[in-house]
Image (cartoon, rainbow, N blue to C red; front, side, top):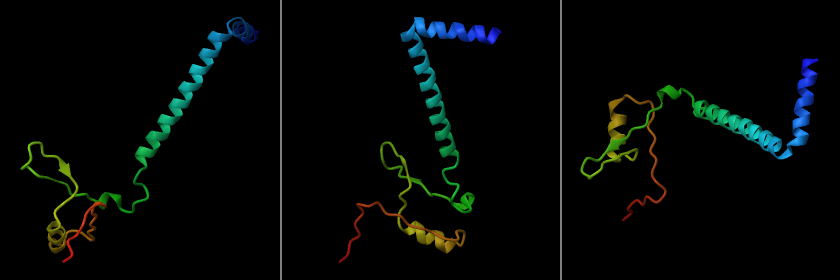
Length: 107
């Protein structure tokens, strides 16, 4: 009987204060929706590279040019580094990516 009494009190409050009850219900819905969105973001973050085979064997080389005032780490390595890596015999494969606006001189 106590549950029924609590439900009656809740319905009475909904009918007597519709604006406050609506704001309360809306805030609970927004809270649940944002919680599910954050759970989806966490799932996406932890499973980002799950399709890459042997992902523990994939490395990205970065370098920092110390000649600038504020040197930043960048993943654009000079082209001779690729040949040095291949000659060392350590990697199984080396790939090279150039920025889209990169132009090679052809003369």
